[in-house]
Amino acid sequence: MYHAKKTWLDKVIDSEQIEQLTADGTISPHVAQLLVQRGFTTREAARDFLETDQMAFHDPFAFKDMPKVVERIQRAVNEGEMILIYGDYDVDGVSSAAILWHALIEIGGMAECYIPNRFTEGYGPNEAAFRWAAEEGFSLVITVDCGISGIHEADVLKELGVDLIITDHHEAKETLPDAFALIHPGVDPAYPFSKLAGAGVAFKVAHALLDREPVELLDLAVLGTIADLVPLVG
Image (tube, rainbow, N blue to C red):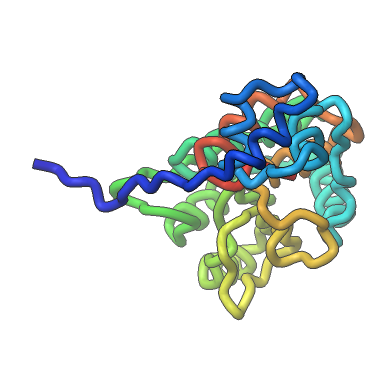
């Protein structure tokens, strides 16, 4: 019989905090309890979280490499280069690949997605896949939700003469891959929010490419964000 390795823990809720949130009658006790459990214990914090119409997207060009990314992708589109989106097999990875694919197709790019096999290829870039991409004529590879640990694979692709753009959110090692450009909220100190999921990072690239907020892709960004269990803030 299967036994779960994790244990559910019930948080101790401060009833006074719930009373504060429900005092003006705009928040129900049930919603107030959920807010307190998530750490939103003041009216100001709760309002900032709930009133999404007041939120604004961070500037995607806050990533220091984003201008390079946009210039390289636009050049690939203008010159008819084949672009490969290298994703991951989980919900966040597939959502990320879909977001970027839609953006590239909208600007006229020739883009295909590659989702590695969970059982035979594992997680992240692999040398065989990158060699296949070069043989097939792809001159630009863009990773989504992976790549930050692919130091050897990045070197292989560079030797093959294929440019690599890495977009990822996983924990980075001390040494970073030698890529053409790197979009990673946890590595780039210039970007103001470090807890994006892979789909969130892909959404920022789409935002920059399309020069607008691609709200039609938000459902995919939300799907990847929730499924990957990153903090639902920011």
